[in-house]
Image (cartoon, rainbow, N blue to C red; front, side):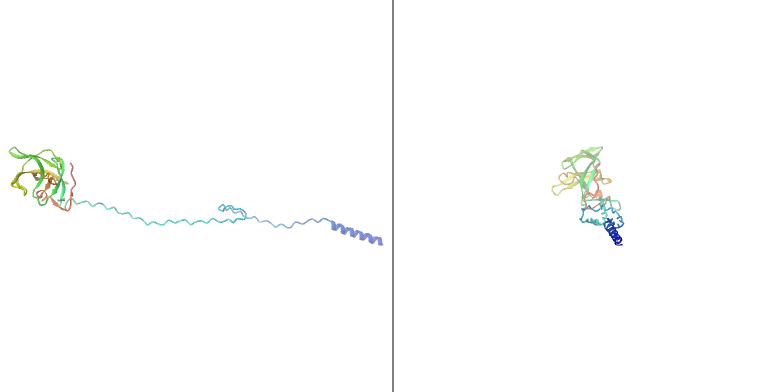
Length: 228
């Protein structure tokens, strides 16, 4: 009876030892499912090493150019042209004008003298002669050291001129010559006189412009110069 109990006790103790020496398999902890993070492509950011703070680039505001005021076109003033004729068609003459002599194909400066009755022209080497029973003269125009070709014209009349600087009178020939001032072509009387010591080789008197022109002494060379 005693031996049976001992055997049972022995068997129980051996089974317990076997259970205590059995190797236990470690149980892996339960893994949580990983959530895939979205990949953000930020190429504008500058690569930085781990631990460095990435600074977002600051965008500078675009500079706005100041608005320039609109430039208005400056009106171009047209030069005011001189009036060469009056409303009734008369020529306007200044106190000095260019006179073209077609017979000589030359233009001469002339003084317009409202106080003189007859026009005069600077003549040198004056020689009177007779042709077909009429009086003629030949002469040259000289001024400022320039002498023209010889001109021959019939004498319209003879006049006696008394000069204050000399005693007695001088007999001078009066001729008719064609002249042009501006677009006016006309003939007028000229007294032949030596004007080489005077400022102008020609003087225009009232007998020329009385009916065809008016004189504005405040102007000069109103009419264009004719050269041919």
